[in-house]
Image: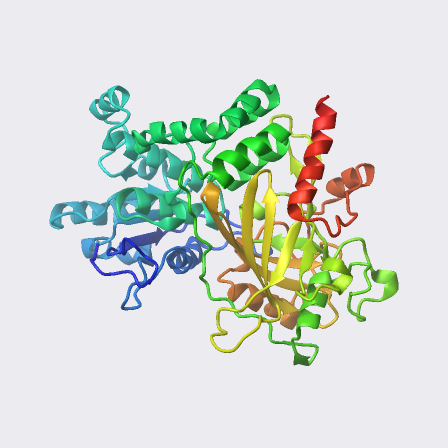
Length: 548
Protein backbone atom coordinates (compact mmCIF):
# COMPACT_ATOMS: atom_id res chain seq x y z
CA UNK A 1 0.00 0.00 0.00
CA UNK A 2 1.01 3.60 -0.57
CA UNK A 3 1.25 6.31 2.07
CA UNK A 4 -0.72 9.47 1.26
CA UNK A 5 -3.15 11.73 3.08
CA UNK A 6 -6.92 11.52 2.63
CA UNK A 7 -8.49 14.75 1.37
CA UNK A 8 -10.97 15.73 4.09
CA UNK A 9 -11.09 18.65 6.48
CA UNK A 10 -13.13 16.62 8.99
CA UNK A 11 -10.69 13.71 9.44
CA UNK A 12 -9.11 13.49 12.88
CA UNK A 13 -7.06 10.47 11.78
CA UNK A 14 -6.23 11.10 8.12
CA UNK A 15 -6.23 8.13 5.77
CA UNK A 16 -2.67 7.57 4.54
CA UNK A 17 -3.04 4.27 2.70
CA UNK A 18 -4.50 2.91 -0.48
CA UNK A 19 -5.78 -0.58 -1.07
CA UNK A 20 -5.39 -2.35 -4.41
CA UNK A 21 -7.85 -4.93 -5.73
CA UNK A 22 -7.62 -7.07 -8.87
CA UNK A 23 -10.57 -8.92 -10.37
CA UNK A 24 -9.69 -11.77 -12.76
CA UNK A 25 -12.47 -13.02 -15.02
CA UNK A 26 -12.86 -16.41 -16.69
CA UNK A 27 -15.21 -17.96 -19.23
CA UNK A 28 -17.69 -19.82 -17.00
CA UNK A 29 -21.32 -18.60 -17.14
CA UNK A 30 -21.80 -15.87 -14.55
CA UNK A 31 -25.40 -16.61 -13.56
CA UNK A 32 -25.64 -12.91 -12.73
CA UNK A 33 -28.85 -10.93 -12.99
CA UNK A 34 -31.28 -13.86 -13.09
CA UNK A 35 -34.22 -11.54 -12.33
CA UNK A 36 -32.87 -8.54 -14.25
CA UNK A 37 -33.63 -7.10 -17.71
CA UNK A 38 -30.32 -8.48 -19.04
CA UNK A 39 -29.39 -11.75 -17.30
CA UNK A 40 -26.11 -13.66 -17.42
CA UNK A 41 -23.53 -11.07 -18.51
CA UNK A 42 -19.99 -12.35 -19.07
CA UNK A 43 -17.66 -12.43 -16.10
CA UNK A 44 -15.44 -9.95 -17.94
CA UNK A 45 -18.34 -7.47 -18.05
CA UNK A 46 -19.08 -8.07 -14.36
CA UNK A 47 -15.42 -7.67 -13.36
CA UNK A 48 -15.05 -4.35 -15.17
CA UNK A 49 -18.21 -2.97 -13.58
CA UNK A 50 -17.30 -4.11 -10.05
CA UNK A 51 -13.84 -2.57 -10.43
CA UNK A 52 -15.43 0.75 -11.43
CA UNK A 53 -17.97 0.72 -8.61
CA UNK A 54 -15.66 -0.41 -5.80
CA UNK A 55 -13.76 2.89 -5.78
CA UNK A 56 -16.94 4.77 -4.84
CA UNK A 57 -17.15 3.10 -1.44
CA UNK A 58 -14.17 5.04 -0.07
CA UNK A 59 -12.75 8.53 -0.39
CA UNK A 60 -9.99 10.13 -2.39
CA UNK A 61 -6.54 11.31 -1.39
CA UNK A 62 -5.25 14.88 -1.56
CA UNK A 63 -3.81 14.21 -5.00
CA UNK A 64 -7.23 13.07 -6.23
CA UNK A 65 -6.34 9.39 -6.34
CA UNK A 66 -8.89 6.88 -5.06
CA UNK A 67 -8.28 5.25 -1.69
CA UNK A 68 -9.37 1.97 -3.30
CA UNK A 69 -7.61 1.29 -6.58
CA UNK A 70 -9.26 -1.54 -8.49
CA UNK A 71 -8.56 -3.15 -11.86
CA UNK A 72 -9.83 -6.10 -13.87
CA UNK A 73 -8.18 -8.44 -16.37
CA UNK A 74 -9.30 -11.48 -18.30
CA UNK A 75 -7.53 -14.70 -17.31
CA UNK A 76 -6.66 -15.27 -20.98
CA UNK A 77 -4.05 -12.50 -20.69
CA UNK A 78 -1.99 -14.98 -18.63
CA UNK A 79 -2.22 -17.75 -21.24
CA UNK A 80 0.82 -17.31 -23.46
CA UNK A 81 3.39 -16.30 -20.90
CA UNK A 82 2.13 -16.31 -17.30
CA UNK A 83 3.32 -12.98 -15.97
CA UNK A 84 3.53 -12.73 -12.21
CA UNK A 85 3.76 -8.96 -12.52
CA UNK A 86 0.13 -8.94 -13.72
CA UNK A 87 -1.08 -10.10 -10.31
CA UNK A 88 1.65 -8.72 -8.07
CA UNK A 89 1.20 -5.44 -6.25
CA UNK A 90 -2.45 -6.10 -5.39
CA UNK A 91 -3.68 -6.60 -1.84
CA UNK A 92 -6.83 -8.58 -2.65
CA UNK A 93 -7.46 -10.74 -5.71
CA UNK A 94 -10.99 -11.89 -6.59
CA UNK A 95 -11.30 -14.64 -9.22
CA UNK A 96 -14.57 -14.94 -11.15
CA UNK A 97 -15.58 -17.90 -13.30
CA UNK A 98 -12.11 -19.40 -13.86
CA UNK A 99 -12.14 -23.14 -14.51
CA UNK A 100 -10.71 -25.82 -16.78
CA UNK A 101 -7.41 -24.98 -18.47
CA UNK A 102 -7.80 -21.34 -17.37
CA UNK A 103 -7.03 -22.48 -13.83
CA UNK A 104 -3.51 -23.54 -14.82
CA UNK A 105 -2.73 -20.13 -16.35
CA UNK A 106 -3.84 -18.41 -13.15
CA UNK A 107 -2.18 -20.74 -10.65
CA UNK A 108 1.11 -20.48 -12.53
CA UNK A 109 0.97 -16.68 -12.37
CA UNK A 110 0.10 -16.77 -8.66
CA UNK A 111 2.93 -19.22 -7.96
CA UNK A 112 5.40 -17.04 -9.85
CA UNK A 113 4.22 -14.01 -7.90
CA UNK A 114 4.74 -15.88 -4.63
CA UNK A 115 8.23 -16.96 -5.69
CA UNK A 116 9.50 -13.76 -7.32
CA UNK A 117 7.85 -10.95 -5.36
CA UNK A 118 9.58 -9.73 -2.23
CA UNK A 119 7.39 -9.61 -0.32
CA UNK A 120 4.32 -11.10 -1.98
CA UNK A 121 1.71 -8.35 -1.77
CA UNK A 122 -1.41 -10.53 -2.02
CA UNK A 123 -3.14 -10.67 1.36
CA UNK A 124 -6.31 -12.45 0.25
CA UNK A 125 -7.27 -14.67 -2.66
CA UNK A 126 -11.03 -15.00 -3.07
CA UNK A 127 -13.03 -16.99 -5.61
CA UNK A 128 -16.70 -17.05 -6.54
CA UNK A 129 -18.61 -20.37 -6.63
CA UNK A 130 -18.46 -20.64 -10.45
CA UNK A 131 -14.70 -21.25 -10.26
CA UNK A 132 -13.41 -24.83 -10.30
CA UNK A 133 -13.48 -26.67 -6.94
CA UNK A 134 -9.68 -27.01 -6.91
CA UNK A 135 -9.30 -23.25 -7.38
CA UNK A 136 -11.83 -22.55 -4.64
CA UNK A 137 -9.75 -24.70 -2.29
CA UNK A 138 -6.80 -22.32 -2.80
CA UNK A 139 -8.56 -19.34 -1.20
CA UNK A 140 -6.84 -17.71 1.75
CA UNK A 141 -7.07 -14.60 3.90
CA UNK A 142 -4.11 -13.13 5.75
CA UNK A 143 -2.14 -15.91 7.38
CA UNK A 144 -5.06 -18.36 7.25
CA UNK A 145 -4.91 -21.15 4.66
CA UNK A 146 -7.83 -23.63 4.86
CA UNK A 147 -6.93 -27.28 5.33
CA UNK A 148 -3.87 -26.80 7.53
CA UNK A 149 -4.45 -29.03 10.63
CA UNK A 150 -1.94 -27.10 12.72
CA UNK A 151 -3.68 -23.80 12.01
CA UNK A 152 -7.08 -25.29 12.83
CA UNK A 153 -5.73 -26.57 16.15
CA UNK A 154 -4.36 -23.13 17.04
CA UNK A 155 -7.64 -21.45 16.06
CA UNK A 156 -9.70 -23.82 18.21
CA UNK A 157 -7.46 -23.11 21.19
CA UNK A 158 -7.10 -19.37 20.56
CA UNK A 159 -10.15 -17.87 18.82
CA UNK A 160 -8.95 -14.33 19.60
CA UNK A 161 -5.79 -14.61 17.51
CA UNK A 162 -5.09 -12.93 14.17
CA UNK A 163 -5.24 -16.23 12.29
CA UNK A 164 -8.67 -17.01 13.80
CA UNK A 165 -9.88 -13.58 12.76
CA UNK A 166 -8.65 -14.26 9.22
CA UNK A 167 -10.62 -17.52 9.14
CA UNK A 168 -13.81 -15.72 10.17
CA UNK A 169 -13.15 -13.06 7.52
CA UNK A 170 -12.76 -15.69 4.80
CA UNK A 171 -15.99 -17.36 5.89
CA UNK A 172 -17.82 -14.02 5.66
CA UNK A 173 -16.54 -13.37 2.16
CA UNK A 174 -17.60 -16.88 1.07
CA UNK A 175 -21.12 -16.20 2.31
CA UNK A 176 -21.31 -12.93 0.39
CA UNK A 177 -19.83 -14.42 -2.78
CA UNK A 178 -22.42 -17.20 -2.73
CA UNK A 179 -25.05 -14.58 -3.69
CA UNK A 180 -25.35 -13.19 -7.21
CA UNK A 181 -25.49 -9.55 -6.21
CA UNK A 182 -23.07 -6.73 -7.00
CA UNK A 183 -23.69 -5.30 -3.55
CA UNK A 184 -22.64 -8.55 -1.88
CA UNK A 185 -19.58 -9.00 -4.11
CA UNK A 186 -18.50 -5.43 -3.42
CA UNK A 187 -18.93 -5.82 0.33
CA UNK A 188 -16.92 -9.06 0.28
CA UNK A 189 -14.03 -7.05 -1.15
CA UNK A 190 -14.60 -4.18 1.28
CA UNK A 191 -14.55 -6.53 4.28
CA UNK A 192 -11.33 -8.12 3.02
CA UNK A 193 -9.67 -4.73 2.56
CA UNK A 194 -10.87 -3.50 5.95
CA UNK A 195 -9.77 -6.63 7.76
CA UNK A 196 -6.35 -7.00 6.12
CA UNK A 197 -5.23 -3.75 4.52
CA UNK A 198 -6.73 -0.44 5.67
CA UNK A 199 -9.67 0.91 7.69
CA UNK A 200 -12.80 1.72 5.69
CA UNK A 201 -15.62 3.74 7.22
CA UNK A 202 -18.33 2.00 5.22
CA UNK A 203 -17.69 -1.36 6.97
CA UNK A 204 -15.91 -0.41 10.19
CA UNK A 205 -19.00 -0.40 12.43
CA UNK A 206 -20.23 -3.63 13.98
CA UNK A 207 -22.83 -4.03 16.71
CA UNK A 208 -22.27 -7.77 17.11
CA UNK A 209 -20.03 -9.11 19.89
CA UNK A 210 -16.82 -10.45 18.36
CA UNK A 211 -13.36 -11.69 19.21
CA UNK A 212 -11.99 -8.85 17.11
CA UNK A 213 -13.29 -6.30 19.60
CA UNK A 214 -11.49 -7.94 22.52
CA UNK A 215 -12.07 -6.01 25.75
CA UNK A 216 -14.27 -3.64 23.78
CA UNK A 217 -17.08 -6.17 24.20
CA UNK A 218 -16.97 -5.62 27.94
CA UNK A 219 -17.04 -1.83 27.58
CA UNK A 220 -20.02 -2.05 25.23
CA UNK A 221 -21.91 -4.39 27.56
CA UNK A 222 -21.25 -2.10 30.54
CA UNK A 223 -22.53 0.93 28.64
CA UNK A 224 -25.68 -0.99 27.65
CA UNK A 225 -26.36 -1.91 31.29
CA UNK A 226 -25.58 1.58 32.57
CA UNK A 227 -27.83 3.32 30.04
CA UNK A 228 -30.56 0.83 29.14
CA UNK A 229 -31.05 -1.73 31.91
CA UNK A 230 -34.87 -1.33 32.11
CA UNK A 231 -35.19 -1.76 28.34
CA UNK A 232 -32.90 -4.83 28.41
CA UNK A 233 -34.94 -6.46 31.17
CA UNK A 234 -38.21 -5.80 29.34
CA UNK A 235 -36.79 -7.27 26.13
CA UNK A 236 -35.41 -10.38 27.82
CA UNK A 237 -38.70 -11.00 29.65
CA UNK A 238 -40.72 -10.95 26.43
CA UNK A 239 -40.31 -14.30 24.62
CA UNK A 240 -40.79 -12.94 21.10
CA UNK A 241 -38.37 -10.06 21.63
CA UNK A 242 -35.76 -12.35 23.19
CA UNK A 243 -36.08 -14.72 20.22
CA UNK A 244 -35.61 -11.78 17.84
CA UNK A 245 -32.45 -10.64 19.65
CA UNK A 246 -31.07 -14.18 19.51
CA UNK A 247 -31.73 -14.30 15.76
CA UNK A 248 -30.12 -10.88 15.26
CA UNK A 249 -27.03 -12.02 17.16
CA UNK A 250 -26.75 -14.94 14.73
CA UNK A 251 -26.68 -12.68 11.66
CA UNK A 252 -24.30 -9.85 10.84
CA UNK A 253 -26.50 -6.76 10.99
CA UNK A 254 -24.63 -5.49 7.95
CA UNK A 255 -26.53 -8.28 6.15
CA UNK A 256 -29.36 -5.83 5.59
CA UNK A 257 -31.86 -8.24 4.04
CA UNK A 258 -31.42 -10.90 6.73
CA UNK A 259 -31.47 -8.52 9.68
CA UNK A 260 -34.45 -6.56 8.36
CA UNK A 261 -36.48 -9.75 7.87
CA UNK A 262 -35.78 -10.66 11.50
CA UNK A 263 -36.84 -7.21 12.74
CA UNK A 264 -40.03 -7.08 10.68
CA UNK A 265 -40.92 -10.63 11.75
CA UNK A 266 -40.73 -9.61 15.39
CA UNK A 267 -42.02 -6.06 15.67
CA UNK A 268 -42.71 -5.65 19.36
CA UNK A 269 -42.76 -2.52 21.55
CA UNK A 270 -40.01 -4.06 23.67
CA UNK A 271 -37.72 -4.56 20.65
CA UNK A 272 -38.30 -0.98 19.51
CA UNK A 273 -37.50 0.45 22.97
CA UNK A 274 -34.46 -1.83 23.23
CA UNK A 275 -33.11 -0.65 19.86
CA UNK A 276 -33.98 2.99 20.45
CA UNK A 277 -32.13 3.11 23.75
CA UNK A 278 -29.06 1.02 22.91
CA UNK A 279 -28.40 2.15 19.36
CA UNK A 280 -30.11 5.42 18.54
CA UNK A 281 -30.10 7.29 21.86
CA UNK A 282 -26.86 6.04 23.45
CA UNK A 283 -24.82 4.61 20.55
CA UNK A 284 -23.49 1.84 22.77
CA UNK A 285 -21.43 0.36 19.92
CA UNK A 286 -19.91 3.63 18.64
CA UNK A 287 -21.25 3.13 15.12
CA UNK A 288 -21.02 5.93 12.58
CA UNK A 289 -21.54 4.71 9.02
CA UNK A 290 -21.36 7.40 6.30
CA UNK A 291 -23.81 8.35 3.57
CA UNK A 292 -21.95 7.48 0.38
CA UNK A 293 -21.48 10.59 -1.75
CA UNK A 294 -20.29 8.78 -4.87
CA UNK A 295 -21.22 8.33 -7.64
CA UNK A 296 -21.91 12.02 -8.18
CA UNK A 297 -25.29 11.56 -9.80
CA UNK A 298 -26.84 14.36 -11.89
CA UNK A 299 -30.35 15.64 -11.21
CA UNK A 300 -33.05 16.03 -13.85
CA UNK A 301 -32.96 19.68 -14.91
CA UNK A 302 -35.63 19.76 -17.63
CA UNK A 303 -39.03 18.06 -17.81
CA UNK A 304 -41.77 18.40 -20.42
CA UNK A 305 -39.61 20.87 -22.34
CA UNK A 306 -39.16 23.33 -19.46
CA UNK A 307 -36.68 23.79 -16.60
CA UNK A 308 -37.57 21.56 -13.65
CA UNK A 309 -39.28 23.63 -10.94
CA UNK A 310 -39.92 22.72 -7.31
CA UNK A 311 -43.60 22.25 -8.16
CA UNK A 312 -42.81 19.91 -11.07
CA UNK A 313 -40.32 17.94 -8.96
CA UNK A 314 -43.03 17.44 -6.35
CA UNK A 315 -45.50 16.31 -9.01
CA UNK A 316 -43.05 13.70 -10.29
CA UNK A 317 -42.83 12.18 -6.81
CA UNK A 318 -46.61 12.37 -6.25
CA UNK A 319 -46.91 10.57 -9.58
CA UNK A 320 -50.19 8.68 -10.10
CA UNK A 321 -51.64 9.25 -6.63
CA UNK A 322 -55.26 10.35 -6.55
CA UNK A 323 -54.43 13.68 -4.95
CA UNK A 324 -55.08 17.33 -5.93
CA UNK A 325 -51.34 17.97 -6.24
CA UNK A 326 -50.79 15.35 -8.96
CA UNK A 327 -49.86 16.55 -12.45
CA UNK A 328 -52.57 17.13 -15.04
CA UNK A 329 -50.94 14.63 -17.42
CA UNK A 330 -52.33 11.88 -15.19
CA UNK A 331 -55.94 11.48 -16.30
CA UNK A 332 -58.52 11.32 -13.47
CA UNK A 333 -59.61 7.82 -14.42
CA UNK A 334 -55.97 6.61 -14.25
CA UNK A 335 -55.21 7.91 -10.77
CA UNK A 336 -54.39 5.31 -8.12
CA UNK A 337 -54.14 4.90 -4.32
CA UNK A 338 -50.37 4.96 -4.82
CA UNK A 339 -47.83 7.22 -6.50
CA UNK A 340 -45.63 4.55 -8.04
CA UNK A 341 -44.93 0.83 -8.01
CA UNK A 342 -41.31 -0.31 -8.16
CA UNK A 343 -40.40 -2.29 -11.28
CA UNK A 344 -36.72 -3.01 -10.61
CA UNK A 345 -34.10 -1.80 -8.18
CA UNK A 346 -30.39 -2.28 -7.58
CA UNK A 347 -29.88 -2.74 -3.85
CA UNK A 348 -30.77 -6.19 -2.46
CA UNK A 349 -31.50 -4.81 1.01
CA UNK A 350 -34.04 -2.35 -0.34
CA UNK A 351 -35.34 -4.29 -3.32
CA UNK A 352 -35.61 -7.86 -2.03
CA UNK A 353 -39.10 -7.26 -0.67
CA UNK A 354 -41.79 -7.59 -3.37
CA UNK A 355 -44.87 -5.53 -4.26
CA UNK A 356 -43.43 -2.18 -3.22
CA UNK A 357 -45.91 0.69 -3.36
CA UNK A 358 -44.64 4.26 -3.06
CA UNK A 359 -47.04 6.88 -1.71
CA UNK A 360 -45.82 10.50 -1.83
CA UNK A 361 -48.04 13.44 -0.86
CA UNK A 362 -47.49 17.04 0.32
CA UNK A 363 -47.23 17.99 3.98
CA UNK A 364 -50.39 19.86 5.05
CA UNK A 365 -51.86 19.33 1.58
CA UNK A 366 -49.19 21.58 0.09
CA UNK A 367 -49.75 24.48 2.47
CA UNK A 368 -46.41 23.99 4.21
CA UNK A 369 -43.86 26.66 3.29
CA UNK A 370 -41.06 24.09 3.49
CA UNK A 371 -42.23 22.29 0.36
CA UNK A 372 -41.89 18.98 2.20
CA UNK A 373 -43.60 15.71 1.35
CA UNK A 374 -44.61 12.63 3.25
CA UNK A 375 -43.57 9.22 1.92
CA UNK A 376 -45.40 6.06 3.00
CA UNK A 377 -43.87 2.94 1.41
CA UNK A 378 -45.95 -0.24 1.62
CA UNK A 379 -44.25 -3.53 0.82
CA UNK A 380 -44.39 -7.29 1.43
CA UNK A 381 -42.01 -9.25 3.66
CA UNK A 382 -41.68 -12.99 4.19
CA UNK A 383 -41.27 -13.47 7.93
CA UNK A 384 -38.75 -15.62 9.77
CA UNK A 385 -38.96 -18.52 10.50
CA UNK A 386 -42.37 -19.40 9.07
CA UNK A 387 -42.06 -17.56 5.69
CA UNK A 388 -45.53 -16.05 6.12
CA UNK A 389 -46.23 -12.96 4.04
CA UNK A 390 -47.10 -9.73 5.80
CA UNK A 391 -47.54 -6.13 4.67
CA UNK A 392 -45.20 -3.52 6.13
CA UNK A 393 -45.67 0.21 6.13
CA UNK A 394 -43.30 3.05 6.99
CA UNK A 395 -43.55 6.84 7.28
CA UNK A 396 -40.84 9.23 6.00
CA UNK A 397 -40.48 12.98 5.93
CA UNK A 398 -39.11 14.27 2.58
CA UNK A 399 -37.35 17.63 2.76
CA UNK A 400 -35.96 19.54 -0.24
CA UNK A 401 -32.15 19.78 -0.32
CA UNK A 402 -29.34 21.19 -2.45
CA UNK A 403 -27.67 19.18 -5.18
CA UNK A 404 -23.95 18.49 -4.74
CA UNK A 405 -23.16 20.58 -7.85
CA UNK A 406 -24.80 23.71 -6.45
CA UNK A 407 -21.93 25.53 -4.75
CA UNK A 408 -23.20 29.11 -5.03
CA UNK A 409 -26.37 30.92 -4.06
CA UNK A 410 -29.13 30.03 -1.65
CA UNK A 411 -32.02 27.62 -1.84
CA UNK A 412 -32.57 23.99 -2.63
CA UNK A 413 -32.43 22.12 -5.93
CA UNK A 414 -35.68 20.83 -7.48
CA UNK A 415 -35.61 17.03 -7.66
CA UNK A 416 -33.29 16.56 -4.64
CA UNK A 417 -34.73 15.35 -1.34
CA UNK A 418 -33.60 14.18 2.10
CA UNK A 419 -35.79 11.40 3.52
CA UNK A 420 -35.80 10.59 7.24
CA UNK A 421 -37.67 8.02 9.29
CA UNK A 422 -37.65 6.19 12.61
CA UNK A 423 -37.93 2.47 11.90
CA UNK A 424 -38.19 0.15 14.93
CA UNK A 425 -36.09 2.47 17.07
CA UNK A 426 -33.52 3.23 14.37
CA UNK A 427 -33.23 6.57 12.57
CA UNK A 428 -32.47 6.38 8.86
CA UNK A 429 -31.49 9.18 6.49
CA UNK A 430 -31.59 8.89 2.70
CA UNK A 431 -30.71 11.31 -0.09
CA UNK A 432 -32.93 10.85 -3.13
CA UNK A 433 -32.36 12.35 -6.57
CA UNK A 434 -34.71 12.41 -9.56
CA UNK A 435 -32.62 11.13 -12.47
CA UNK A 436 -35.20 11.05 -15.27
CA UNK A 437 -38.96 10.89 -15.83
CA UNK A 438 -41.12 10.41 -18.90
CA UNK A 439 -43.15 13.46 -19.92
CA UNK A 440 -46.39 11.49 -19.40
CA UNK A 441 -45.15 10.04 -16.08
CA UNK A 442 -45.29 6.53 -17.51
CA UNK A 443 -41.98 5.91 -15.68
CA UNK A 444 -39.28 7.53 -13.60
CA UNK A 445 -35.80 6.59 -12.37
CA UNK A 446 -34.82 7.63 -8.83
CA UNK A 447 -31.42 7.32 -7.13
CA UNK A 448 -30.90 7.03 -3.37
CA UNK A 449 -27.98 6.88 -0.96
CA UNK A 450 -28.85 6.19 2.66
CA UNK A 451 -27.57 5.28 6.07
CA UNK A 452 -28.67 3.92 9.43
CA UNK A 453 -25.69 5.43 11.22
CA UNK A 454 -26.13 3.75 14.59
CA UNK A 455 -26.48 0.30 13.01
CA UNK A 456 -23.41 0.82 10.83
CA UNK A 457 -25.35 0.36 7.57
CA UNK A 458 -24.73 2.35 4.38
CA UNK A 459 -26.64 1.58 1.20
CA UNK A 460 -26.99 2.98 -2.30
CA UNK A 461 -29.07 2.14 -5.36
CA UNK A 462 -31.64 3.25 -7.90
CA UNK A 463 -35.22 2.38 -8.89
CA UNK A 464 -37.35 2.22 -12.01
CA UNK A 465 -40.97 3.01 -11.14
CA UNK A 466 -44.23 2.85 -13.11
CA UNK A 467 -47.93 3.01 -12.29
CA UNK A 468 -48.45 -0.77 -12.48
CA UNK A 469 -45.03 -2.17 -11.57
CA UNK A 470 -44.39 -3.46 -15.10
CA UNK A 471 -41.69 -2.32 -17.49
CA UNK A 472 -43.09 0.54 -19.62
CA UNK A 473 -44.25 -0.86 -22.97
CA UNK A 474 -42.78 1.99 -25.01
CA UNK A 475 -39.34 1.45 -23.41
CA UNK A 476 -38.88 -2.28 -23.95
CA UNK A 477 -36.58 -1.66 -26.90
CA UNK A 478 -35.06 1.08 -29.02
CA UNK A 479 -34.70 4.67 -27.81
CA UNK A 480 -36.95 4.20 -24.80
CA UNK A 481 -34.88 1.30 -23.45
CA UNK A 482 -31.63 3.17 -24.08
CA UNK A 483 -32.93 6.19 -22.20
CA UNK A 484 -33.66 4.06 -19.13
CA UNK A 485 -30.30 2.32 -19.49
CA UNK A 486 -28.53 5.72 -19.52
CA UNK A 487 -30.47 6.80 -16.44
CA UNK A 488 -29.12 3.80 -14.51
CA UNK A 489 -25.63 4.20 -15.94
CA UNK A 490 -25.30 7.72 -14.50
CA UNK A 491 -26.10 6.03 -11.17
CA UNK A 492 -23.11 3.73 -11.84
CA UNK A 493 -25.42 0.77 -12.50
CA UNK A 494 -26.00 -1.60 -15.39
CA UNK A 495 -29.32 -3.27 -16.19
CA UNK A 496 -27.98 -6.73 -15.30
CA UNK A 497 -27.37 -5.55 -11.71
CA UNK A 498 -31.08 -4.92 -11.09
CA UNK A 499 -33.61 -7.07 -9.25
CA UNK A 500 -37.33 -7.50 -9.77
CA UNK A 501 -37.96 -8.45 -13.40
CA UNK A 502 -37.18 -8.09 -17.07
CA UNK A 503 -38.70 -5.95 -19.79
CA UNK A 504 -41.23 -8.74 -20.41
CA UNK A 505 -41.67 -10.45 -17.04
CA UNK A 506 -42.11 -9.18 -13.49
CA UNK A 507 -41.06 -11.03 -10.36
CA UNK A 508 -41.98 -8.21 -7.96
CA UNK A 509 -45.58 -8.33 -9.18
CA UNK A 510 -46.01 -11.94 -10.29
CA UNK A 511 -49.46 -13.44 -10.79
CA UNK A 512 -49.07 -15.46 -7.60
CA UNK A 513 -48.08 -12.33 -5.63
CA UNK A 514 -51.04 -10.39 -7.03
CA UNK A 515 -53.45 -13.19 -6.11
CA UNK A 516 -52.15 -13.08 -2.53
CA UNK A 517 -52.55 -9.28 -2.50
CA UNK A 518 -56.17 -9.61 -3.65
CA UNK A 519 -56.87 -11.83 -0.63
CA UNK A 520 -54.79 -9.59 1.64
CA UNK A 521 -55.17 -5.97 0.45
CA UNK A 522 -52.25 -3.66 1.22
CA UNK A 523 -52.75 -0.81 3.75
CA UNK A 524 -52.58 2.06 1.27
CA UNK A 525 -54.36 4.80 3.21
CA UNK A 526 -51.90 7.72 3.64
CA UNK A 527 -50.78 8.18 7.22
CA UNK A 528 -51.14 11.94 6.87
CA UNK A 529 -49.72 14.81 8.91
CA UNK A 530 -48.50 12.75 11.84
CA UNK A 531 -44.89 13.20 12.85
CA UNK A 532 -42.73 10.11 12.46
CA UNK A 533 -42.44 9.83 16.25
CA UNK A 534 -46.21 10.22 16.77
CA UNK A 535 -46.93 7.54 14.17
CA UNK A 536 -44.44 5.11 15.71
CA UNK A 537 -46.02 5.75 19.12
CA UNK A 538 -49.44 5.01 17.64
CA UNK A 539 -48.18 1.78 16.09
CA UNK A 540 -46.51 0.75 19.35
CA UNK A 541 -49.75 1.24 21.26
CA UNK A 542 -51.53 -1.02 18.75
CA UNK A 543 -48.93 -3.75 19.33
CA UNK A 544 -49.26 -3.42 23.10
CA UNK A 545 -53.00 -3.95 22.86
CA UNK A 546 -52.44 -7.10 20.81
CA UNK A 547 -50.08 -8.43 23.51
CA UNK A 548 -52.67 -7.95 26.26
